[in-house]
Length: 211
Figure 1 (cartoon, one colour):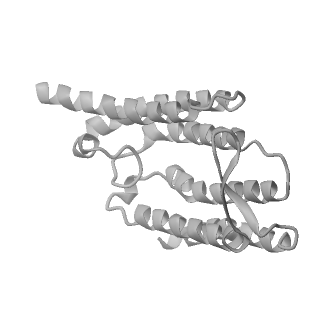
Figure 2 (cartoon, helix red, strand yellow):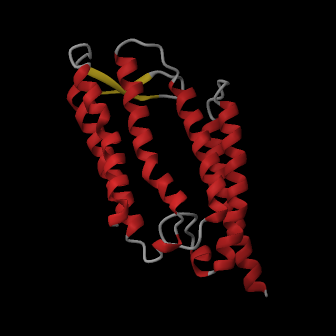
């Protein structure tokens, strides 16, 4: 864990950076700040200025440290490539900056297409993870952790090669759909990215039992 202390410290500071931005904008920000939006890009949830500026980054920091801790405590952590661990390190910092930027911007009256930003971000994330999935070796924290993949290294490898292709394709479709107002595209594509690899892994498992 010691070799990652610098990276953990940097990513933690990035997560908390929006607090400084919030303090700088404090007098301009209203007492309630948009923190949740529906599929029509409408605000359907608000929080107090105090919670939006301080609470959200602190909660995200907690999630970040927990995910990093669980990854580093994995009995098979040596199987997790440094590139995949960097993805784990940077997902929540990017989310923190993105979420608070949207909330501050909307609170200050700037027209922001939240759906476009979120789908574009997730599409890019799916493509990145999809490229790394085939290289992920068997472990208990990162990857498609099903009873069949964890019990069979062959099932794990085949499932992750297949899942990598599925995630890249769904990620590209999500990026494309972000430019169009397709309300349910995100849910459909996310479902495809989860269900297809799961079904594929199960069918491999059944085929192995047949032999």
